[in-house]
Image 1 (spheres, protein in one colour):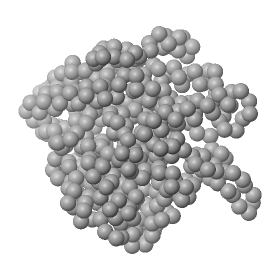
Image 2 (cartoon, rainbow, N blue to C red):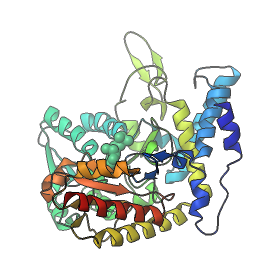
Image 3 (cartoon, protein in one colour):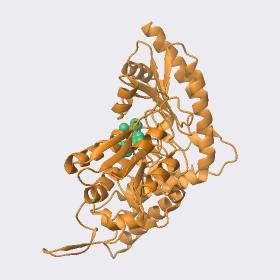
Length: 422
Ligand code: C6P
């Protein structure tokens, strides 16, 4: 570990004017390997993105020199770890422009963030006959918890439909909202289709009915800016491992007023002010929602990933990724037999496709033999597949360290797949 860390220290990212993708790639050691004797082409970023040296280095520094529990100790290491952990929360606050750091609750990822809101808010405020609105393009993480709540409470799940391109039908959304609606939960960006939803509009319309809304930002956080005050969303969640941080890190933002009214998610140490056998008084925000020892190293890593994104420039990275998606869409659309799934006007970083007469799992396996990592399957969004009447898709998903040359490798490999199956 020490040798790696020493090497890492020499590879600090620097602010850049243009987009020097070769320079950026040097920050990601994992990209330097070969797979099946071919240079790795990593195009599964929507599942999990890679981690830059700066983040690895920060996590290693915590483990090597600061490892200790937080909030509890009066000794030097514990205070150092607490400062680093709470420092990461401050970075998250600025990253999403929350009013206060205490509104940013650390969770293991978007799934846990949604479950926290379902348990803390849903189980307290939603009852029989109430309605919860989600969309047709949700990841299972933003379907199953609400279904569980509906089953428990006798509430009803309503679904905003989408068109064949993968765009939500906003008029149908309007028609679903009524005095029975108690909650709305919608993805900022679809992981299966890449559609960017008009979340500001969706939030405004929910608020006309006084309904709180959660935005699942798992696919937005790695690629774009987030301003929770401008959006005026009530809850917003994302996972660190999709935005260049370690697994086990993530955030659910909530407006302080709502978080204060909610039930805690889990009970245990660090989330209490006092405990007797008769009664427990819960801690203030954010501790009320962070029972037990959290993923300290991972959340510190998330803070470092935010630093990294700020250094390289989030807007420049997004512009580069946009151009990459445009190029990939053009290349793949030109191949006979390839069908792009998800053709919304507003898209980012996800390119789902099918090949005539070839199962997506076979596409994935053959591409892997060429060193290309994509995802094949339903992408934990089975209702999307049902809506589009397809069993699955192959999905290439991009990050700012991917190149046009890698897109060419992908396109050539797809042509070979077609050859093999023709
Ligand atoms: N999507 C994908 O390959 P977790 O697993 O908690 O970090 O994230 C869940 C999740 C929630 N919402 C959206 C929109 C997502 O894309 C994901 C994770 C991965 O598309 C793994 S299934």
